Structure formats: structure tokens, C-alpha cells
Length: 364
Image (cartoon, rainbow, N blue to C red; front, top):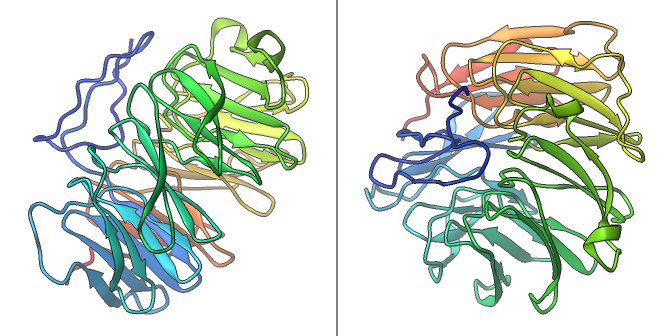
């Protein structure tokens, strides 16, 4: 079986992950975490997180002020309101002011490091950690509660009005009460859940993929596991591992597997919509990102491809960069950005037609 490499670790903190069905080998280098907010680009890599001006590519600020070998960033930053939220490999989690680059607070109660994307709602941030917990942290940096799973949590929690949905490498998807942090229900998947599950608009269905070669639709209000599974898709046994997040657009679920295919499923039935999946050369680790009329993805091998939802072009555009890409592209109304390692530059900024605006390796 092809050896798929995990998104992020360092040589010192190399992970020995034992997972059924497929055993990914640990990476010994980190991958940059990328986020966009209007005209600001956030690049988290190594000892710093950089706030960069998108039109000019100048570094507006960097955090912390001085390099500290104990502080290493590889997580994807979360941009929410006037703040950036991110954790490091020294078990710290930060709230950083977007304008100044100054830390508002530091949360240091976790027993494991942070490599996953957090979620935020009404000033409360939900931070997934490698100690197996998701931490609910209030606007002043105080812990409200923690929810413990049985393994690492890299997936961004999904938050609705009353419930938080969590995917864990312990093979479970959890529904957790947002106010108390108490478990409401859990569902065992066929393998580790690496990426964030996808929640539909009314929060009635949760779509979760795993490296157990499956995509599952779960009824969030079902009273037992027997009634919870609405459908289960494995492409007649040919589906590969699902590492990246799916996107849900107009009742169609789009996602990619590690065998080199992108699928479009009827979200209600799990039936394939396209006569055959899109086939591409390479491996998608980060998943798909929705555009206005289509989607884009980046392969581990450095290919960036944009498609229409109706597959009227194959692909609409395609770019290749030197290096490896492990995070899904991030987009705004104007820009598309990817980070890569092992190439000429660390960061690449495109317009939405796939034209390169600039590339850079930020320095302080």
C-alpha cells in the first residue's frame, strides 16, 4: 500500500501513530499554516507567525518579537473578527490582535501541542490538541471546559447553536454539548478521522470521512447508532482513505480520496452524481475548497487545480509549483493562497483565475 505522509510533525516530536487499515508514516518537517483575511495573509511557520499585506507582500508584523526555539508554529491560523487564534508545539494557544500582532492572551493548560485549526463562536474558541482534548476557552483566555477523546485531535470542530461536533484519531465522531462540554453521543468510524466533518445548513446531517476508506452521513438527532447512519459510501470497495475535508454545495457533497479521485455524491442518498469521479495524478491531503462556481484542490506533489462543479472543463485551470502541499488552498473574494515546503518559496498567492500574484518566503 502506498505510504501516505502525515501533514505535520517535527523530528524531535515525531509521532508513532497506530491506526487500523492504513498506517501513515510521520513527517519529519513541518508544513506552513496559511490563512487569509481581506488584504492580510497569515503565514505560520517555524518560530513565527507573519501578518503580510497581500497587495504589497510586505511583512506588517510577526509574532513573537524574538525567535524562541521552544515556540514553533505549523498549525493553520484561525481568523475570527479582529483576532488570529493559533497554537504552537510548546502546548501554548494564543489570541493575537490582527492589527498589531500582539498577543491578547496565552492559554498554557494543554498537555499536548496544537497542529489543528480551531473554531470560534461569540468570542469562545474551541481548540483541538494532540493531547486528545478539545479546549473551550473564553474571551479572556480562561478554560471553560475540556472534552477528552482517545487520541490526537487535528480536525477543526464544527459548531452549531447548541452542539459541537468533533472528529478524532481514536476513530470516533463526537457530539458535545456546547455549554457544558458533556458528550451527547459518539459514533465509531472505520478509521481515524483526520479532517473536520462537514455539517449541513440546518445541522441535521454530519458528513464524516476517515482513513478507513469511507464517507458516512450521520443523522445528528438519532437516538442510537443503528438509526444514525443515513448512508455509507465506499465506492464498491474502491474508495481510498479520506484525509481532507469535504464541501457541501447545493445538496451535493464533494470530496477526494488518496487513490486520486474526486467524488460528487447526492447529499441525501449518497448516490454518485457524476458518471465517474474526477481522476487526477497525486495525493490530496488537505481536501477541497469551494469557489463561487466550483472548487479547487492542491496535491501533495504541488499541483493546484480548479474545476467547475459541473465538470464542464477538466480542469478549468492547473498550476504546478515546486514543493509539497499539505493544506487545502484558502480563498477570499479576491485571492487564493497555498503554502508549500521543499520548493523555491514558502507561500504562493493567486487570483481566483489561477494567475500568480506573488510568491514569498517571509522573513522578519
